[in-house]
Image (cartoon, rainbow over all chains, first blue to last red; front, side, top):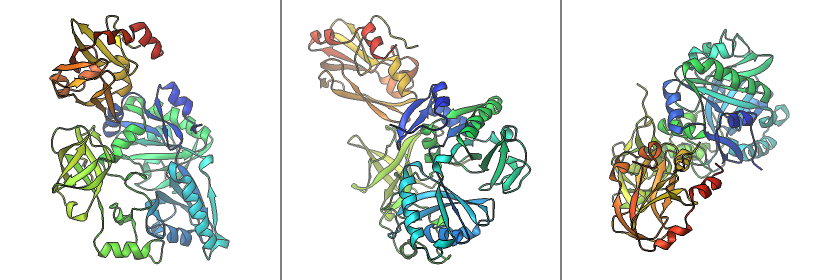
Length: 376
Length: 127
């Protein structure tokens, strides 16, 4: 039996096509991936992201504990701020990539991938059991308590304050949702419900993510669709979410990231703070920074007419199979086959000519800088 | 509401067949194109290839995924729709006209009897 989010009946009403996504029955599209993708690039879109997990970590030792298990430096966060970060195993393989928010001095919220809730929570619990400050640490998997939506696109800032009016009353204190800057989070009252609103997203566009109870988010969904309607908002499924994030080269767990891949290999070393002190995976990540890697994530564009590249297709260079595609699609913005994949570092330089093997034939492609889509 | 022309035959895998003499034209149904949405690439078989009924011989790709197209009947591929490879969106906009894939010279016309009538196909897709 697939799990359903608080918005399941809303998706049905909108005629969504539903798929199994990591055990969740989620909308892959409502009308068309291309239309939904372009709505987010040009106007606005709303996504159900209720399947994602929420873990709260609090107490006097919370910051020190998170700095031990996560790669980014949590001390950089003032109350009301968030950061992209990664959780690594002893081998510095990625257990999950996530967003960590400091809601107040000693209270943190982690937003984790739906498919990783169980392994993440098991790992956090085992790590906290061994942590010297465990007596001053509370760790709670609150995933069942929360639903969430992402509202994304260049026009969102024009209507979000109408959807969620008023000033915040917790986390970062601002007079209106649009006063939040990138990666900031505030607690707002919405029709007698408490919701957390952050200026974050997974599309490369400006936008907000809103977390709250099932009932709160059902109301938020309806309200945002209503106030966004004059601005061209569309409900968007996981299909568009995937093409949008691929164009801007955001990694997806299970594709670019897994327990046998390090953040350095995945090209997200910017979110690894090597000088913050000891943390899980530190020694290997420090060494990888200095020495050569076995594999490196590259972005590529197809250089001749072909079917779209897809995950698991082989990557060729100099007449040999050298790597593997991890994400690939037809880019709706560029109308061109694009993708991400792992190759040895000698083939990772921009403008390197590679080939993608599609159903037994090889087609020319070229390594390009990330992100593949640059905002004008 | 799906368009299911009454003069065609259909397969369970959503291809349609238009028979003229000993030649069959093959495409995918309105229902199939609506399910795929956003067709971005069509890969057709080589002309002259001999195919068997139910053999995968073409590929249609949407933004999301690649789907095999199966020949509804056995025979030789005698014509290809070049315009649909240049403009794959024809599969979405004209599934029964400009969106056809290939023509096949029937080697066993009796196979046509095994195909679905428009009524049976309509039942199959719950229309």
